[in-house]
Length: 596
Image 1 (spheres, rainbow, N blue to C red):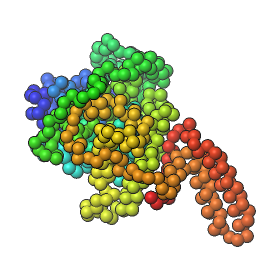
Image 2: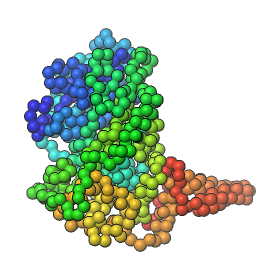
Image 3: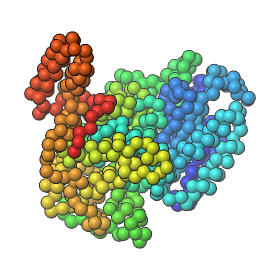
Image 4: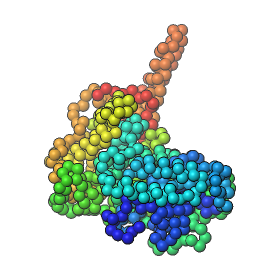
């Protein structure tokens, strides 16, 4: 597929079918065009850089679900290519329902994924088309009928060729409204975490929930999905023993550890998870220790951009296309708009992996990886907490951060809390019916993205202002100091972006403190500490008991008020010190909104 310059490549590179074999595990069963140019459609051969494709397309634990959807990123095969965006639709069907049952189908269910490998990050659009075809392919009940997949390849390339990466089609299926309703003010903490280029791991099952949450957070960064992920998957795969005997590639000379996966000792007839889907924890610990030893020295990534202090390198040439035009960034290498966005976060070894297979676990401790925003469903990823700066439990809407210093950097300022409260009010007050006919704006998905664009524009503008120290205090002085030494900020700051003169510096919600701010801060504190939750429970207990019948009032209210009073006094005495345990527990359901 790489017989010409990148520009001439079709939007869709391959359609691939991955199946689960009871002895061989996940394997490629069909690809069109063939993944290896000189082989047949059903050879099962894979380029070395894409060796994880079967495990990404058919996710870990998929047998627990009838169907699922995966978004994943593959590294480019050549210097001309960029990140390859994968969308996979998984389904399972009872073997007895098949019209044509091959000899190697020995289990009660057949599990397969149909997968699109694309050069364009149109995840939701690809998924919508792919789900229809996957459904039709399974309805045939004869997996040798591959004509439908060839037609899909031709159809997708016909309909996507020349399509621009703008407008709502890029964000199809990604809902910031749902994200804010679920994570509430913590969405802003996630936004800041990624600006700081930290190691962020999202965790939840099934995979469609995982990739939906992760990509929705990224959609809040202007231009990030359209143009910011081009270099987000530049990693080197490791050789492993998980292949068939005799099929192993050469071991890389500079490998830190030899193998992270146990070889399969026996096929497991009772489960579709075989031995190669489990990691030996002792090997993990050794790998982490080895990486930590190397990681200390390599903390300053050798390839990150560090301009000479002082004058910016040059003035960025502007696109003739006006407001919406993008041009190649002189330093970032990404397509940029007039404001220098998207910020080059996912460059120079900072990875975006919406779904990570267990076989990729070594990337978390790879010394060539600066950081990552990654998604996982396997509990082993979550247990290895020391390999991530933050673990985002999507189910519980909780962000777990072990490092007290990082928690201090991410503490939301009063202006930040006003901003988050403003978003939350608009989202909760504008209910679904407003958006049914597409006329809703305030509180809608595009409106939310516009607010985050404003937040980032004003933050960038404030750094250029002569009174920047005062202006940046509203975003959090510790946060902005840490952000200014990140790769993405240094690259952005090295160019002049003329359009920034149009942006008024200063936090959108700067201003004098008021009583409303005290209430907002108190509300935020109550949500975010264990003591605060106890107070909330004590208050609820009080209000329940107050409305009980008269004869029980004396003892009930007395007991409840004592409980509330003791919780309040212990909480206020240590209000100044943030909790050291897991930060930011999940918000109470039906949390009362404080008025601004």
